[in-house]
Length: 482
Ligand code: ACM
Ligand code: ZN
Image (cartoon, rainbow, N blue to C red; front, side, top):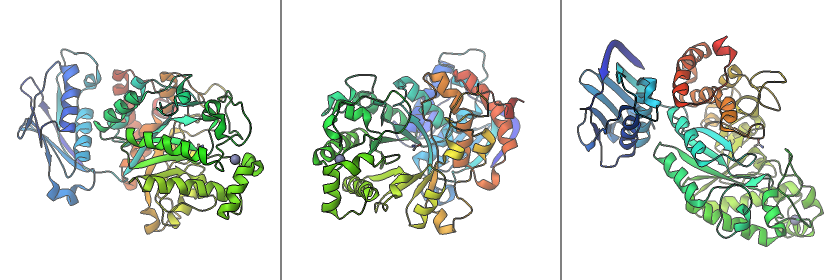
């Protein structure tokens, strides 16, 4: 809810930020956001300030999880929330109300740093509002990752799903297995920790993905002993799905994966850990004596059951360490692991099936929210495989009509996925991501009854000026600009 008059509330060199406690992250973020473009060092102090951030746990029910109220009056600006996440999102709304020059990296003079008088009451529809990025097919440097996280935060998205491993490259340093990242670009553990901290300072959880049991060629190239067949193997040089996967009949492979997760859990505090699980051909397992022996010893009827057994093993491994497993919808094959959360990507059916079985789901169907798809038909359009226009993307409702109320309660939210086969530069990524990620952010945040495509289009046209100020590229969609 927003109420505003033509009156403006001005910030100036006397502006201060009042925070619930010293070094409060949302207050620090706001001070940081103001410092560069205004050139002012806006002090953060415990207690009162002309911009007042207040956490009121007694009113959590009123705000809802991650909800906040923002009031701007001639007397000052107040953001109040029941939790710290709400304060982060209130700060992002304040940022969006400021002139777009607030996005500049250097000091800008001659700007009236003012916002309209407003009263906003706001809270999200879903608790999982995700943006994914594949850094295996093409690698993206830490600075780009942080910029992407900042844009997710600006949209009040709260999950960055980092697709770190695949056939084409393993992108995370693992100290026990140096050969994984010996060749090719990858993130050191220090860099990954800096991304986690950067995201946390913006209210975003980084969910790492370590693919198993398929999409493993980059590992097998470095450690061929974890395959069913004889090597040598090479990181994939074409796009696709490959037959050589982890040999899960081999105890050494499982030990390797456990060791990898041990290091991953040290770097990533996220409760959810993504284990992939998608697109694992069973051809090698069907021929492999070790995999067949495993099936016999465990009483598994077929290779699908072996996949399920593998996922269950890691579901248990993560649960014992206080974490929760999330995987692509192929983890339904052969039966879901008890604690598993499903990312429904081949459509919405996997999500429906999982919700019916009482499991949590994140909706991310390729038909709507795969941002590697073309915006429109046409040979010269960027993107690949199929088309998902902005309007089609915006039209998606994660709680699908076939769900009962109690099934719909298992829908944690929605996530856009950005696979990188089709681009290899930051600007190439950005024209696939924007404006469609903004549409997905709105699906995640805004009540279905309040969503309207024509209204979104008008607001994005205005918002694009902010992306211009940030130097972020976007697709000049005819649905917006004609
Ligand atoms: C996927 O797109 N293979 C999850
Ligand atoms: Zn095998």
